[in-house]
Length: 234
Image (cartoon, rainbow, N blue to C red; front, top):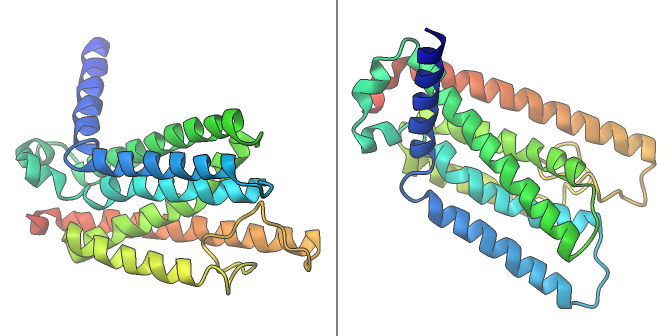
C-alpha cells in the first residue's frame, strides 16, 4: 500500500512537472538566462564598482521571467494538454493540483536563482547567496500570487498576462519615486539610503515584507476560491 502511494505521488509529480515545463516556458527560461549573462558580462568589463544592491536587480528580473509563464498559464494548461478528465477525477483537485503546480514553479525559481547567485559569486562579487535569494523571493512570490489571482479572475491566460505586464510596468516606473518607501514592491534591501537611519530603514523593510506576505496569502487564497468554478474556464 505504501509503495503504491509513493508511486502515485511520483506519477502526479512527474505529470505536473511536464505541465509546468510545457509549451513556451523554455523561451522564458532562455530569455532569463540570456539577460542574466549579458548583464553579468557588462559588469565584468565596466569600470564602476559593483555592490550587492546592483546584483539584487540583476537576479530579480530573470526571476520574473522564470515565474511568469508557468504561473499565469497554469489554469489553462490542462485544456491545452487535453487532460481535463484526469484533473476532474482528483478529489478536491482545485486545491491539490493547482497548489502543487504553484509550489513546483516557486521551487524551480528558487533553484535557478541559487544557481545564478552562486555564478555571481564566482564571476563578479562575493554576495550572501542565501540572503540574496531570500530577499528576491518576496516580490517574486507576491507577483506570482497576484498573477495566479488575475488568471482565475480573467479566465484567460493571455488577458491576465497583459494585466500583469501593465501592473509590472507601473510599479517599475514608480520604483524611483518610491525608492525608499514601504509601498515599493521592488524595494531593494541592500540599497540602504544615506539619509535614513538604520532603525527607520529596518522598520520600512519589515513593513514592506509584511505587506508582501499578506498580499501573497490573500491573492493565493482568493485564486483557489475562484477555482471552485474551474469548469467555467474551459
